[in-house]
Structure formats: structure tokens, C-alpha cells
Figure 1: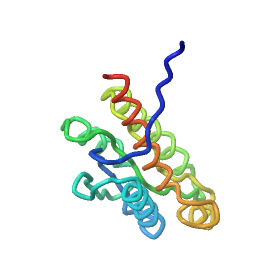
Figure 2: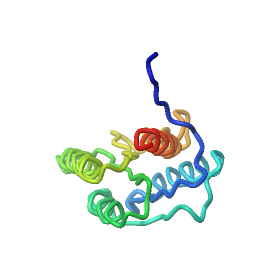
Figure 3: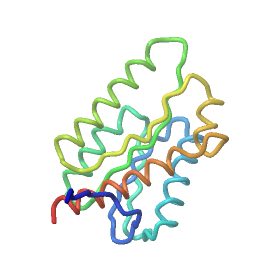
Figure 4: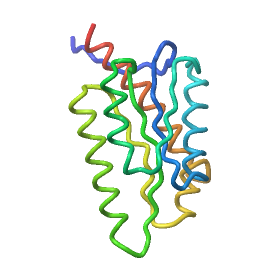
Length: 156
């Protein structure tokens, strides 16, 4: 019979670091609130989570790496908001932040969840941070819970 491993959605005992960009704080703050609500509703304990605020999304990967390197966390959730402007700056940031967070996950073996909105407008960002399209911070936290569970099953 085929063995199937699936994540359980129980945050009890999971140590999570939430790295949050202060840039576009109105939106990023709502992503953080969604993530914390998700962790609470799935049995997580606030004492098992650490919130680290950084200036912008550019600083998310290096901070995620520092957190992963401590060995104190089961997962890192990166939350931020990048909104397209009139210059190519958005494209550079979005690409490098995604690449950097992916590299941290690969190098550390930890779930590093990409909860960074990349939108064309402020309205699109608001829709994804508790508006009509849900809260991507909540979804990122849920992915972290599931991935920690899967990793634990693989390791046991």
C-alpha cells in the first residue's frame, strides 16, 4: 500500500518566525494580523512565535537566513508588500526577494514561506490583505503549519 504523508493543521508546539516588512505598513500589518490569527485558531501559542520587523521587502531574505541559522524555529514566514510603480524597481525587488527566500529555504531545509504580495495597485494589495480576496498572511501561516507537519513526518 502506498504511504501518503500529509500535513496536519495543528500549530501546537510549532516555533514560527514571522519576518514583516514595515514598508507599506498598512497592508503588511494586515498580513501579520492574518498570520497571527491563523496560528491562534490552529492551536498555536503566541510564546512560540517571534515577530521581526525589517525596513522593507529587500531585507526579508537576509533576515530569514539569520533566523533559520539559529536553529530555534521550525519555519519562517516572510510577509511584505511590493506595489508596482513607474520604474523597474518593482521588478528587481520582486525577483530578488523571491529568489533570496527560496535560497534560504533550500539552504536551511526549513519551510520558508513566501507571503509577499506583488501587486500592480494598492487596491489589489488591500484585496489580498483581508479584503475581498482573503488574507494572504493567513494563507502563508497555514502553509507554514502544514509544511512543518510534513517535514516532521518525513524525519520520523
